[in-house]
Length: 180
Image (tube, rainbow, N blue to C red; front, side, top):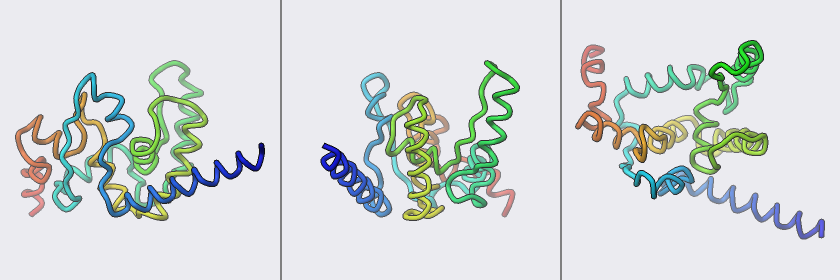
């Protein structure tokens, strides 16, 4: 029985590693969140390469979601500690999270939504794996293309087109032009 479980766990890990390697080169077609919400909202998405997303939009997302993205290796233990301390002090007020962009990318592409220690543990492990196999650029590109920007609206391009009738490259055109 234990041997069978060990084999099953090893096979699952090998399949996951293989899928992570494939997604280093192939854009994820769907995510668990897209599948979960498809019947309620539909799925509007359009993949764009990172080079076709406004640098100002990229900087805005980095500043809002993970200002230390380039300083950590997938998990920002300092941010997690700060979030924990805040949450202990403030009880049931809106909670602060310590998830990095890499962790959010891992959750969105591979895992389910919801809160559990199991999911968080898998998210941490996947974050380290993504940093190792994908690197920062690919993580950022995938993240910006799979995050939900509104009900059924996934990725920067779909959000820019639906909300502002422009491309993701033009989403912050005035800011980008001002920087010259």
